[in-house]
Image 1: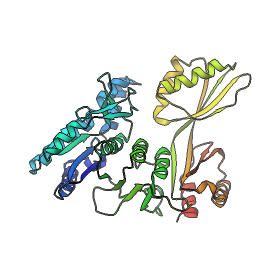
Image 2: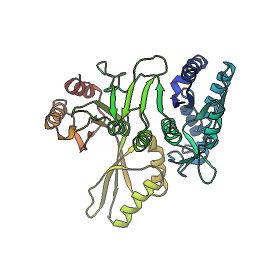
Image 3: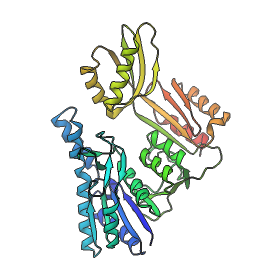
Image 4: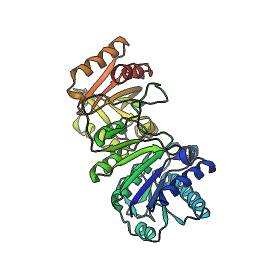
Length: 393
C-alpha cells in the first residue's frame, strides 16, 4: 500500500467551506487504498494576526514565547480537520509537532529539523487512520516548542515524507503550480511543468512564495519528488525532481522585502568587524551580500530581510550602539534556469533592459542556475514585466 503525504496551506483552510473541500480531497486519496499523512498550516492569516497581537504587547517579543504563541495556529487546524474527517466517517487523529516526533535545533523562529521519530506516525497508520500533523513546528532538546520560519509547513511535509519513505509528497495551495513569474503581477506568466531541485531552491531563496527553501533542500537530499498543485481544482501541477533541461530562463522573481544596511565607525579593526558579524548571526538577523569598504574607518554594507529590521534596530540600540547606520529599501531581481550563467546573450539582454530603464545596479551575482541583480533602490514591476516578455514569453 502506498504512503503519501499531502500538505495544505493556510489559504486552503481559511474557513469551514474550504476545510470541507480539503477533507474531500483527502478522502479521495484515502479511498484509493493509500496510507495518508496530512500536514497543515494555520488557517488563513492566523499567524500574521498572532504576530501582530504579540507586537502590540512588545515591540520585539521574546523568541521562545512567540514560538509558543504562533504554533497554536497549526494546532487549531489539525483539530478542526480531524473533527471534520471523523464526522465524515473516516478515522483521523491529530498530532502536534512534538507528538509526531519532530525534533529541531534550538533556534526559535528559524529552527531546523534534526530528527523525526516516526514510531507514533507508523503506529497510527497501521490502524488505517488518517494522520493529521501540525506543520511549521517541532520541539528542541530543552522540550521547548520551536517554529521553522514562514513557509515551514512545507519543510515539515517533505521531512516527514523522507523519514517515513513516502511514495509521493503533494503540496497544495491556492495556485496550481510554479509559474515563470508572479501571475498576480504579470499576465503573461506561464505554469512550469517541471523544475529541478536546484532551480526550485534558487527560486525559494530569492523570495518566490511557492515552497520553503529548506523543504527543497531536504527533497533533493532524500530524492523526494514533490508535486505542487491547487486545492481547488485537479489541474496538473508542477513536479520538482532531478530533471534538468536546456539552458533557458525559466522563472523570474522580484524581491522587495530587503533592506540595504550601511554601518560606519570612525575606526576600523578586525575585532569590531568580527563582533558585528557574530552579533548579527547569533541574534538571528543574519546578513547577506556583505561588502567591506573599510580602510582606516569602518564602512560595511549588507542586506537583511525586512522582517528582521525591528530586531536589527534593537541590536543597534543595545549591542551595536557605537555604530552609525543607514537603511535603504531595495529590490533584488533574480532569473533562474539551469545553465543560464553560461549564456552571454541572456546577460546582454538583461543589462540592456536595465540601461533603458535607467535603473542603477548595486551588485550582480552569477551562479550556475541563477543571475541576481540588486538595485540601489526599490524598483517597480515594470522591469519584471519587460524581462519576462523578452526572455520567457
